[in-house]
Length: 440
Image (tube, rainbow, N blue to C red):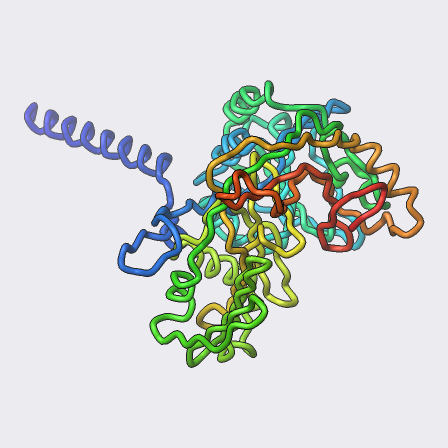
């Protein structure tokens, strides 16, 4: 009898230990994001070192703002932003609510203290929550959002809101993210935060959660100069056109190449590469989740992110995905799109692929000093006062760099590229350079 009781006790202890172990595995489970992470294949052609970029370093916010009542501070520092988004990785979502309104969604439960994560353009929530953050939830809601709010004051566990681009929908996620842990990480970023201001440009942005946020001042912005490296056209053709490349013509610094399905054009003067897949022309992928997923994989597989690039634009009408170069935490712009990688995905493969052929090399001293940039309030006032500008169409404001190809060379031995700080304004869906009270 006594032996039987001992056996029962031993079995009970084993069951308890198994239960503890399984509970631990559930709470520490991390979903594998292999469907968007690209394994390095040394046999496939590439245009640079075979280093695979993590998906959450390419698809990420470009600005973080902490708002506590009237106190507003923020940063574009990628390390601080990454620490915050890391708190969202692989977390459990206990409840999902879809909020909607015919005009503008109001977040009635939001406290006066919250964190804002801003994206330069709208992206599908289903793709971001599942493929990028790997959140564990019963289903993935699908709205196109461009802003995330994280509220850690209202409850012990963080509440996350995704705000749609048109402000008529929001997704509310009740998570298992500990508010105290999130606040601790947020506090560590405090020394890097600078005063930000919220701007009102139309009736929608009168609500603080929809205001346009930008740094009050553009302090310590310098001109940077780098020796430029050039991507090999031959290697790029191997990636895009394969083995059966035919050189068609070379006139006025413009070369064309083709295979049996597509054509590439290289402009030597502008240092740009343009490819069109003629067989896929009528089969553009309009599903942004698939377009982002496939274009990210495609570029990553041939080491196409030759500098720091991030997802910067999505066009649901054309299916175009835009990845923008970043330098020192700020986006880089160029009139000839030297700083962009544009991709349009077809039914089964790439439809269009456009990019610059210049990459940054060694930093060299610049001979120029940057002009002092105006404050964001001065930019706002001048735009609002400009009769040729519809101020209602201003939807974002950011500091960035203008990429140029200086004509004077260092010792005439190396080509260089120069990055000059400027204000940029997203106007009617397009980023434009702010100059002398207007846009260009």
